[in-house]
Image: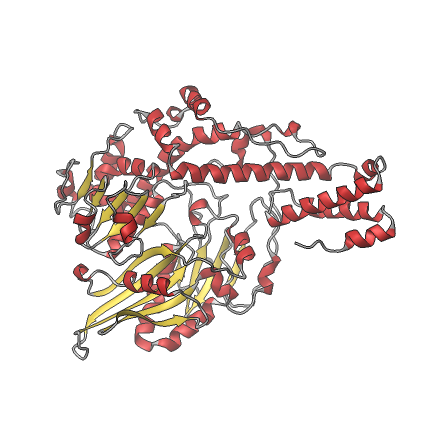
Length: 605
């Protein structure tokens, strides 16, 4: 996604106007406030046509309960709704990932999340609808196509009545959505009720969720669940990066119990505090898609740290694999721990000490201790230096031979340290660190955005009667030449080998994913401008100069353009599709009746 918004394309494209608000009907007591949508088409009317459990499916795949059986080990005890399908491989993954490693000693309640591969050959009847709801989502909040997230609420308490002496059970939410803060908040409401009242309350929760509006970006939703009402806003790609549009409480919110300021952001400062002397180096490692392993004392700290790493390059999407919590039982264990080839581009979060030996050949290892309150660990951190170690000891730190491309930014370290000394509130420290990462990422990506925008053909080169012009190719050498005058030095005070950093980034999965997305967006923009140019033409005058065969051919081509515009949700100005449809109808009516009958028949896919 363009980090600076569509205006980065300069005078070469025109921005569609905002659409008018449209009322979204809802059959539920859940309230939905629709903000003006961004460019890209009309609001979807399909929501009123959703079937039972379709609304549930826009949020969750299923809800699971995993318990411990003395003979079987971990086992899936319950799946809601009952018709939800999980393959045996998926169930196995869920079983192992929903419990902390035995060495973690997690007594009481623990929350964490994991991510696992989705089984193949699963299709959903909601595919097209979900694509539409995803269209305006920020890159980092789009549905995960090949993986599921598992959000876990694990309870372990002493129980002498059980043979093992402990009650151990996990309640899980399985979803494609990376709304980590939202789903953890949801579990805090659901899990205590479930552990007290068992399955009937899960059925009630599922019914509540199936009455929620779907999570369209840009909407403010009030979502009732088990007698509690949560109010959230779903972010959109048109939000200004770095600003969080806070959900304000109003007088009509008398029934709202919880207002969530974010649905997905983790506390960066808390997560990076054990290693904050090295935050800039970690940003480089994540940006370049390097193999990273986080060794933590518990799944909660492991998953939070991995999610913090993935989000530190936001609004750039992290395009490699990442596993917030990874175990020796994972189906990818052999693939990711083999020594016969270089470690893959992946970030793993682990808690089992066995990994200290298995992954000691990995190039970058982050070891974190217990995440205590800021201030308690300040002294320990001050004396911690980055070391190049071949073996791993138990001290927290970053173990790597990596030499950063950029010079260390001492200012951010001093600012955060001063905050610790002055007992600055954690949310303020988090905001400072988030802003720092955002500005660093934007300084890095703006030169790329500027160069890619220059690959866009001029609007005057678009002719309605010729195919839309192609984007010019990305040539690395040409891009590198632009950095001398229009590089990151325009927006960043940091010195260092920016050229080397770019050269490495252009070989990374993150660049590949970013460029594919930008190329698709710009190609769709060209198609939209071509469509708008067609709509401005006087088609009646044109067909008078052509034979019936040529006119029929024109109708068929225009129909194809119409199907493409609707299927790909091309970013056309409001009314363009209706205008094109009217043009097609007028051309058809100018033909003999027998041809009219044929052309009025709906085209087969």
